Length: 315
Image (cartoon, rainbow, N blue to C red; front, side, top):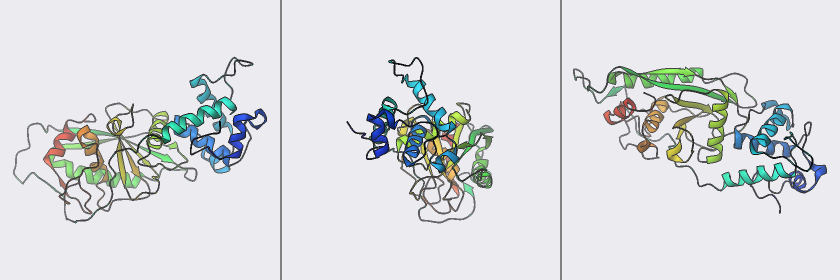
């Protein structure tokens, strides 16, 4: 039976690997079929494969290590002549990779928010609280814990999101200030992720979250925000989590490294989505002044959203 995943099917080298021992893929092999194996390992396990190996289509040391880890985790051993797993992609391994990737490909699209840039405009920074109003009692001074992290593709060597993070946090804090809330920023290690992410693709979104976790664990009481390259999109960010179909992870955010919102309100917008499962959808405010809308110059944080942030898991 031929390979059936969209990623693998029709590739002569991988089809041969499925039926011919001489076509096994071993360390030192080069070619586009190696890239597909690397992609599968990243998708399924968030494997830390070196970007230089991906660029060269090389089955190098990090790829071999990822294959070995994949096989050990799943107990892929040919008991006819083995007692332990090896780092070779043979018949059993390519069949397993193909099956798992196909399952992921066949899942329905995710339902998380996509923060596109819309219409409408406003000016300044304000909240529903008028000058002289007393702060609601539930808004005791507090901090919202946000853990920032960046995925580097094969052509990137340093984190480039630092300035943008400052702008996003500054905008959020100006809108949060009337509610006695601030952001406590945590910076996690960067990690290699040499592929773009489809914001509605469950296997893509789940894999980058795995890779981020592998690179740097964060407290469960923090909101993880990952800067990455989103594929073929006009969105500035997306919120995901168990509520939207990525099982096993608390709500988290992917911010598009290639597209910015003009008002720098993206971070706070996505924090609202993640603050409560009832906001983990693609429904937004009609008021284009609201940061929870798709307006171009949003300047309003509504009480309802501030209250949700105040009781969120990352408060």
